[in-house]
Amino acid sequence: MSTFVLVHGGWNGGWCWEKVVPLLEETGHKVEAPDLPGLGDDRTPISEVSLQGYADRIAQVLDAQPEPVVLVGHSSGGTVISQTAEQRPDKVKLLVYLAAFLLRDGEVLFSVGENDTGSLILPNLVMSEDGSSATIREDVIKEGLLHDCSDEDVERAKSRFVP
Image (cartoon, rainbow, N blue to C red; front, side, top):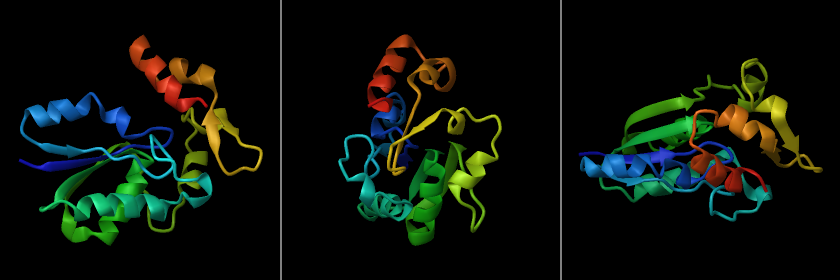
């Protein structure tokens, strides 16, 4: 069996994998679904959040595993697993990009996102006054981002997406 390390995207936390984790565990796999710095239940201040910090957090999880893992990234978590795999290539058995960004060397996530005309994210961002963080307009969550989720899941996610 394998160990899966599940890396969430922006505006999420390890909680977003709560329906996937038991399915993998039932088949005998080990699963880790950590919160990235500043997301989920992690209270790292926004001023200390960076891609390198995200990769360092996941590298810590990999370092605690006795064997190479299946590293799964969703959405912006794709950039995190790419960076982490460069730091710890010997700790990764397989990279899985689940509806995730796979950037070319030198590309920046925000710039790539600006060119994605079908995305609901950038047109619906609400930037903080100082420009250091953003939230998503609440009305877009159910109608767009979570359109195929149950009402229960939408309410649970909204409590975490919207401040």
